[in-house]
Amino acid sequence: MGKDVEVAEQQGGGGGEFSAKDYHDPPPAPLIDFEELGKWSFYRAVIAEFIATLSFLYVTVLTAIGYKSQTDPTLNTDQCGGVGILGIAWAFGGMIFILVYCTAGISGGHINPAVTFGLFLGRKVSLIRALLYMVAQCLGAICGCGFVKAFQKSYYNRYGGGANELADGYNKGTGLGAEIIGTFVLVYTVFSATDPKRSARDSHVPVLAPLPIGFAVFMVHLATIPIIGTGINPARSFGAAVIYNKEKAWDDQWIFWVGPFIGAFVAAFYHQYILRAAAIKALGSFRSNA
Image 1: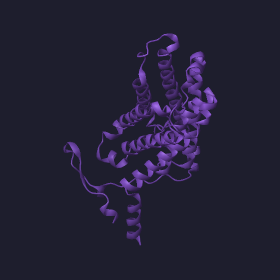
Image 2: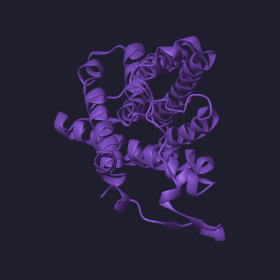
Image 3: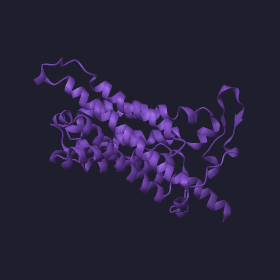
């Protein structure tokens, strides 16, 4: 039964035949791997996640605050000026593209606890690595927002500090749904763009992987900035809330954790157990060994 799940495919560009029989999935990451703690490469990866998330928050929050200052009606500014929502979405998507490209070979380029959680569920990283990545990402987000406030304190406080809050006119259920669906799109894209089988078949896929991931972030921001400011990244929302530290940001904070983690869970399940049919292949392997 498991043998029928994957069918032979032709490699593009005249590169010869790629058969599912020639491909074997890499072994899953161990649930708990204490050996990682004795390797410098592990700590280097954690540091890379910290710096990448710090850089991500610094550039994107500055962009959001800059747009609000350029269109502030109390300052008689041009209401059609600034980068607009399109520019903010490009800032988020573009930074993810850049940072995933830079850090993918070191840490995997997660830069997002929801992505890390999804990859942990897919057995791509161990529990220890996942937890330390999340801590590094949250600390990096806090530091990134802290730098923005340190350099532009008056603008930071006046224009909301880049904190995620539910917009007026929307209920919490709508905000939660936006976060679930938006994170599903992102994490599903991550799984698809980094699928080892695609990498084995198409040699250009690993090089191009940051591009669809960045575009996924860009498109989700276009859709959900007017609703909830777009989180889809618990570290991004948490870091901004810690530094801005206003009641509204904390009241809505749970949405930016529960929504992304549910979306990541659904994306991991869909890709691993439906598209890649992990459960069926495992059952087929069990029967063949019985």
